[in-house]
Image (cartoon, rainbow, N blue to C red; front, side, top):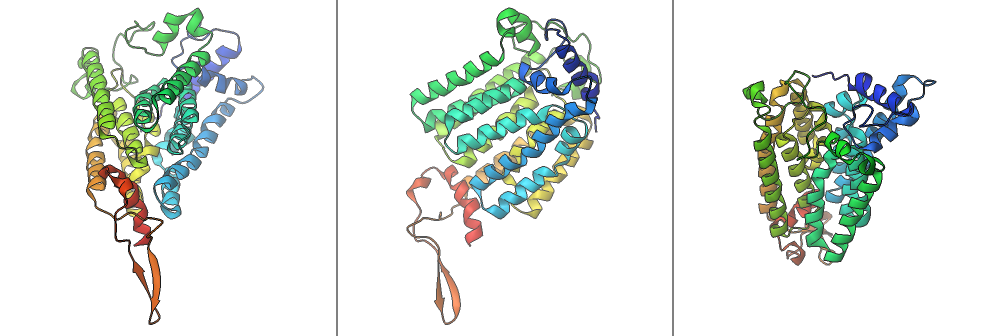
Amino acid sequence: MEAYQDFRLAYVPLASNFISGKTPYQNFSYAYPPLFLYLLAPFASNSLPSWTLALPFVVLDAASVVPVYLIARKLTGHREALIASITFAIAPINLWYNDFLWLNPPPMTFFILLATYAFLSERYTSSFAYLAVATLFKQIALSLFPVFFTTLLIKSVRKEVIRDSLLYGAICFLGSLPYIITIPRIYLSSLGLPGIAPEWPMSTYQFSSPTSLVIAFGANFYEPAKFLLGVALLISFEILCFRIYKGRSTSDISFLTSITYALLLFHALFPRGIYKYYCAAITPFSLIAVRNRKTALAFLGFNLLLLVIPRVFTPWLLLILLIPLCIWEVRCSRTLVMPIDHTQSLTATAKNGKVERTAPTHISPRYEDPTQLACAILNAGKHL
């Protein structure tokens, strides 16, 4: 189950070094953007017990239930959204890594969820601002920028796309001060920016090292495969963005599916490799298929499977998950459903003491793209 001790061995010393006046990246090794360190600093006082540093993680993980519910509510009814949010609240991956071991995904995940909900609510400027904040907590959030950017490109005017993209870049730049100016190479290499030699290279692969797609074939493949995995990751994101743009689908479920694709592809193909606890950022978006007790149990079963499988197979499992996600999306897009329309909604009429339901006799023109039927599919079920 990989009981990482990062909180005790990494986060506590990092916060102590920072409040003592040392410069991150330069005076001590630090691999995240500054905002994560700023979040811990107020709780790093010697007068407070060390466990107080875990409060931001636990609070933000618990608070993530709210945007999970709100996002699910965009797709379906109150009951289904409540099932999704409760399932997320008891997800073993999140309980183990976020609430028991106090690891770092919650701040980034919370703001990614806020960015997603704001985007679905057509508050695009707020969405890109939240995504920038998420990136300043953990740079993995940058992997979602192409999805947000490409989707906005087909939903809004080019002027707004440029403005919101510049806002994202400006917030990331300002949040990186002063390090992006004073020690740019050390700062960017510490964050793992491709093309910049790392300050602390990994000489040998160890059990505590991140696991990539090739580790299942032996540790000797780790370093040589980094370039190939990087190319595969770049190509996969180009295909994903091309698919979004050419598909011209602006439905909420298409956007959420694209986010899930991006997270699975990034974590499966990330050249440096991942740790199991990274998956705590994927679980909220895996909930798009959870609508009843059966799918909730399947989701919880996947969580348990991910916890118990050998760590070398973690990226492979994420890659395999792309298959059911594709199948689920295709089934949604091909299901022909008559969406509920305000002008000809389902009505109940009383005849001989019985209530009969009358369905609409046309398909609304707003579902010209088959993938846009998905939201109607989910919503119509509670009316039939």
